[in-house]
Length: 339
View 1 (tube, rainbow, N blue to C red):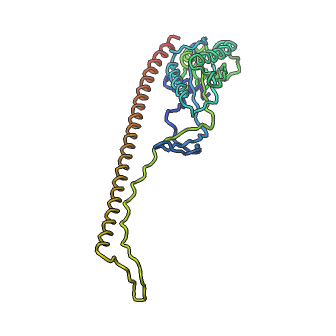
View 2 (cartoon, rainbow, N blue to C red):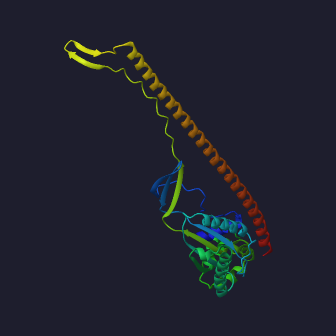
View 3 (cartoon, helix red, strand yellow):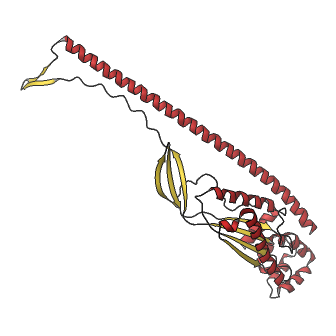
């Protein structure tokens, strides 16, 4: 019943989309992830995670009464087909995501002969499988299962109970009764206001095909982050003045000092050369650190610009889809009024 309630909300609101769709960016590791490896690739640290579980995705397409051929313009079908196309296109380019199976289930509403409804449900499932195979090559890429369900009146009881249908109590008593499906339909037809409400709001969303895409457990995802840059090494401390112990008595320490001014000047020049070399190395390291920092800043700006463009593109796409959904809803309402 949960699926039927969700489907009815889709038909009335024309805004229901994919239950769970993957994005292009790798998900951040969580409690359900295990680190498999950590390597480096240039300026990046590459970590690979085993994701123990992930959400599935489902799509719903509606069919007209007594028909088993998909009308791509009916109700919310344009939005759902667009979402399905985007989702499958993303799967083709994502080698890390694995699909375990695809299940296509055809449904029929309970009005009409039971045998005809069973045939319609099966034909709708096969019709959409053929459509998906011709457009996406679905059966060639994934394991596709086909099911069908001819719903009885009890299957729509929850929808009736949650609706504003006239004579709701009487309708529920008929649905809960022990009559045959055909007898229940005749009894409901004797309540004109309630029957017209059901034909316009309850029964059309039940004529549908649902596509469920189940991911395989144990998906492997990859996360890339910039390596932190080490801070420049501090300048070495000046060497301490050296001396040589030549004799030691109880009264103190005797050291041997340089014997001439020439030796003292030579020691000073040597110390100056070493200090200059140290300063040159420090400046070189500082320039290298600055160069690396500028390169990282440029890289970060590129990533930021790409993210902004992707977000803008996604926003435009969603706005366009919402506009199409609104138009589809208006068309669906007009179709329902004609029925």
